[in-house]
Image (cartoon, rainbow, N blue to C red):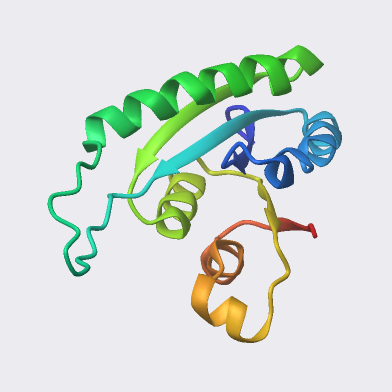
Length: 147
């Protein structure tokens, strides 16, 4: 296989997301892979309510800049500190679509991500990024269920 093996590790910086780091570490060692940490910025949605008036929302550039700062710190403190070769990338769009596209374009050997394990109405209302990635990724997806 030409090039370096790649594991894609999407994060939202939450403790839930961080709980997968031990799996990332194990799989990176087994596959001799570089870890590509992803954070996807979703475009802000404006919902009108009665008498709310103008609501300032951050621009995509502001959101991306903030995410870049947080992702750099996350990669440095949580991934490379463990001796794992890693990079961080901030993308803009729908998380599942961006994760699947990134994994495909980088010929990833695996995606590792967490899921809440919601069911019923909560699942319908919140959707599932992990489920969409599982359905559409061209590579294996290791889904870590968290509480």
